[in-house]
Image (tube, rainbow, N blue to C red; front, side, top):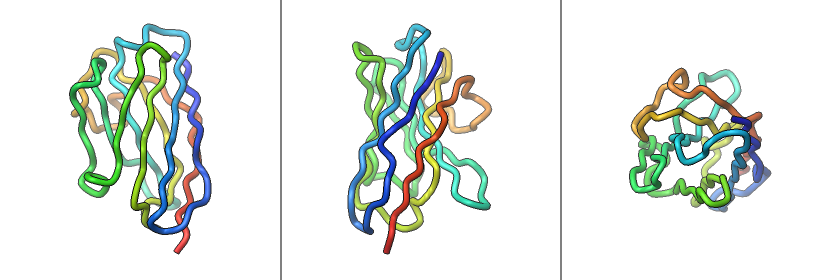
Length: 124
């Protein structure tokens, strides 16, 4: 499975961004999809996860209520809608695919495939 993330950019505090991840080369609906992020000098951390059917989600406490993960299996895409952004959300965001896992899989090693990352910068 190949993943291509896009949609990052520079936004002011309180603004919104919508990240997209396009998948190819595999049976997309068999994969749990997740978003992780890595800020400079910090470890990669789980942001959100979504089951293959789209009916089960999981979020890091730091983004709950502000971010929404969704998927369109007919288009092999997953999105991360990010609202009320804060400077501490600044990071490189990665989409990832987890074969036959669950949306509660929050460890980066649970995910076999990774996109290249897209940079989100939130300015105060």
